[in-house]
Length: 345
Image (cartoon, rainbow, N blue to C red; front, side):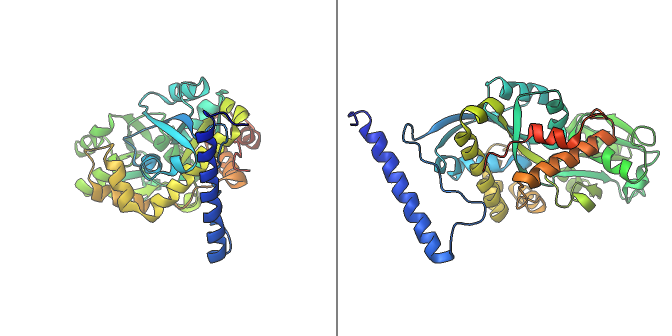
């Protein structure tokens, strides 16, 4: 028998179940089933919401699906009350915060996270979010029109361990240019990369959106390459990581968070202007029109899960071994199996 305190909770759960059941039946009648990748929101009889802390970088346009999920109700739809934490510290600090329970999950760049994850943080990657957002630019007068043209040149980056520096080091290595000896890398604050290029201190610059996009447009720079070229056209760059202990103790909540962000990512792909406006609330200095163009250039329709995502992690591990970021003895497939969790099954 339910006590009076339990009655409202059970009634709410029953109403949510009936609403979702009705939606599912209607969807099946109209289209033969639920859309690919959609799962009916899980209803908890013991609690109608789960409270979570999700860390993200409010200055990075590639994290736009995070505020979208909050603003458009994707978190609520999956029974979650999510506190967004704008985290500006190092990746090691972020992963430690997630692993130790100061945060429950985070969104970040695969090429930034994989090396720290090799060290054993209790964080599991559950899904890819999108591809795109890293670019390498040069002046039109430089004569640099492809990556091979960087041989003997100096490239400005905002961080020597940044995903952008790692990515272009990998792609240089694949075309036979030694990224350590044939190319010089010089570090500047992100907002000074354009000035360094104008002064001739560097011959090219590489960074992520929105900074690099805005420099390309304002300074009329040539985009030499980006992380959607060649084999990376269908490779994710931004990922979701969830605390390992949360997955082990409450897999349903980890599943709900992952599903909510995947749906928000698809919504972002289908509604780039609205997503840009939502993101701009967290980055008031950004131009909504430019943010919209950036989102249209990203591959938010590509958000792999399951074995497809695990394979992409292994490919990145191979790439990072090739440029000495990961230990040469690391088994990429075994590593991917260790740091990936398929919470959607």
